[in-house]
Image (cartoon, rainbow, N blue to C red):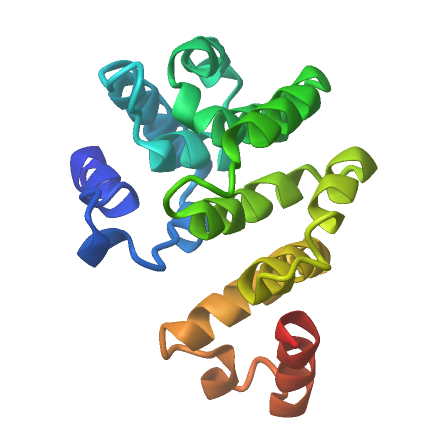
Amino acid sequence: MSIVELITKIIPPSDYQHRDSFSNKRIIDNLTDDEKNQVEEALIKKLSQESITQPDILIIETLAYLKSQKSLVLMYGLLKTAMEYQIDISTYIYLINQDDNMIDTAINAFRKTHDKTKPYYVFGLIHDFYSLSQFKVEKVNKLIEEYTTSDEMLVAYNSKRALRLQNVSHQDYNIITDMLDGKSEMQSGRIEPNSFWTKLKRIFS
């Protein structure tokens, strides 16, 4: 498979049909080191051609998953121009280099962004719970915990779930993804059904 074809698989068109529940982590995990390096270079080039105010966050997320130090200059620049995506971008920068400044950047952006009078308040809040939970630091967790007693059922549920998902291993995450795709590892006998459903119940209950 050419690098162009691979990038097309890793970064599909940014519409609901192609992106709903999409994850490219399994694709990345199966690449060789050389392929990962090529993908990193191609994604950095692709990101450099994106709008400075409306970048494709999946590209940034994927570079963060690759721990791309080379992409940081671009990401820090986008942090100043793509204001709508400050929480996501600061999260992904932190995942690459553990820059503690990103913790306060994300928290401040969160507090400025969420206003109950705004349209889609609940859905924006839920998205940001899952972004923030990737920091896995007490200061951010306390912010998410503020919403666990919300009168909004979806807000309370997802704030709790975001915190629980911090304890899900990468392997368990892939198992869950496979199950949702209809490709559960139970089919191959690599995991016992009882063990799988126990884990799933703990995560989603």
